[in-house]
Image 1 (tube, helix red, strand yellow):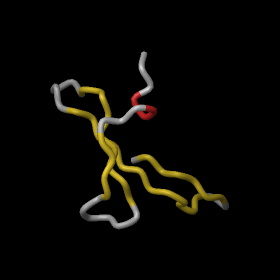
Image 2 (spheres, one colour):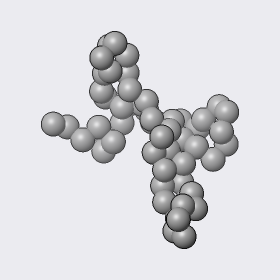
Image 3 (cartoon, helix red, strand yellow):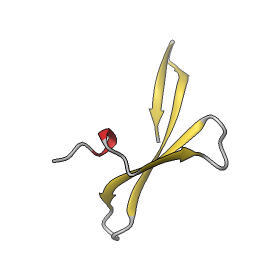
Length: 54
């Protein structure tokens, strides 16, 4: 199976959350639409910093 996060179709800044990126993947959902995920960098979580994928 291809690793979609390794080769995204497009990456752009979120229009509503200034600290997030929107990543358009080469995957399709059950309804046939392109899958997109939000990525937020350096989020403080449980005494450490993580890159959060929502």
